[in-house]
Amino acid sequence: MKKRSFERVPANINVRFSCCESHYNGTIMNLSEDGMYISTDEMRFPFDSEIELIIPLQEDILNVNVKVMRMTKSSDFYDGLGVKVLEPSRGYINFVNRCKNC
Image 1 (cartoon, rainbow, N blue to C red):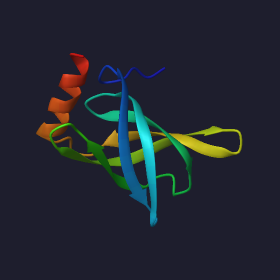
Image 2: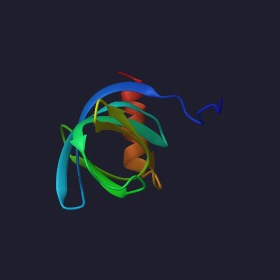
Image 3: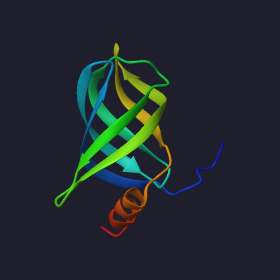
């Protein structure tokens, strides 16, 4: 089994994103410097999509570009996705480090 490059940090953070002219809300369940897992309601879009996540923070909004690496399915619909962060910004790295210290 392949070991992760970075430790995953448990989280419960609201996130918004759009793909194929549809808007979605989700919850970041865990995250690291290079990826995260997002739980969401039923979604419909291509597997290898690149999307922009919008993470509302107390003082700002954090935009994070990601690529969908895997999707999870419950019953008959997809309800979660594992994403890889594309070129993590300093703001994103700082966000992850704050989450580690919570």
